[in-house]
Amino acid sequence: MTKPSCPCYKDSMFVDSHCHLEMESYDADRDKVIHRGIKAGLGYMLTVATEEKYFSAALQIVDSYDVVYGAFGIHPHNSHEFNDKLAEKIKGFFSNKKLVAYGEIGLDFYRNYSPREVQIRAFQAQIALAKELSLPIIVHSREAREETLRILRETGGADNGAVMHCFSYDLGTAKELLDMGFHLSIPGTVTYNKASSLREIVRYMPLDRMLPETDAPFLTPEPHRGKRNEPAFVTLVVTQIAQSLGRPVEEVSPVLCDNFINLFVKGSNNS
Image 1 (cartoon, rainbow, N blue to C red):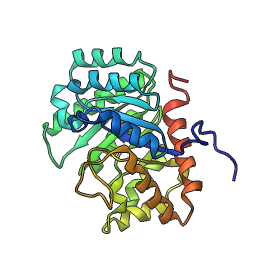
Image 2 (image 1 turned 30 degrees about the horizontal axis):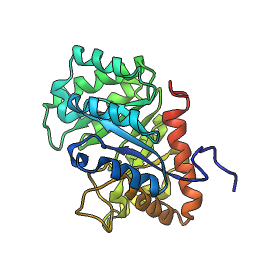
Image 3 (image 1 turned 45 degrees about the vertical axis):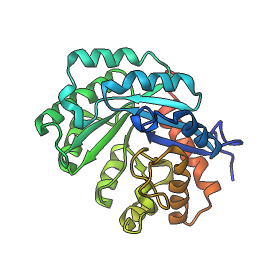
Image 4 (image 1 turned 60 degrees about the vertical axis):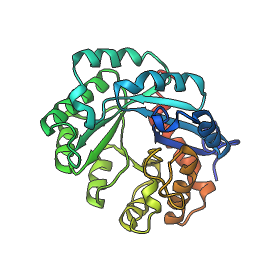
């Protein structure tokens, strides 16, 4: 096997491409959580700040830990908060070289915490802002398949790289997104007994377009389901991906690490 380019290869070979370390769930033991991730073999963690109230905390974490990188954006639940003033504030944050992606942004027609038309406007505006900043985007889409795909096609959303976070649609949608140039991110739900369709997608898609994630503190994988999630548990996600592919973890995980580097780190203002 050719040695991957992942700089963390010798000492660590896992990556959590999407977590929320700045959230209140970690206020009591954040340092311990991050160090458990490092001990478990994580060379990279991407903490994704989804509301303005989390931006300062996320910046502090990113600046305090070498292994933690960041992404900023306004989640569809909070689309009503997005405006020109906030857009300018977000632009200013990206002078930090460890902020490597814009997101998570998108549409959530399941909860509808913001009106659908407000979500659509904020999604379109934030794609434009990410393109202005030459950043890859992290997309959230729940029960909004057609509208999400339409907006992504019309705006060229994947022009600077893109990942569909916590992929939950069908194989046909996976094919459409892959054709657009997307990466697909596989969460802890892949370990659930009823996730056979997601495991089928894992078997179908090219390994070099796949990312593992925890979405911590949410979507805790088996056997810890029901407890708070954390980045260290991404090892369980990667193990299930490898089992689904019939390949050893030692072969699969460094490729996933490289995927993260190629999408978020190489070509960013941190490289």
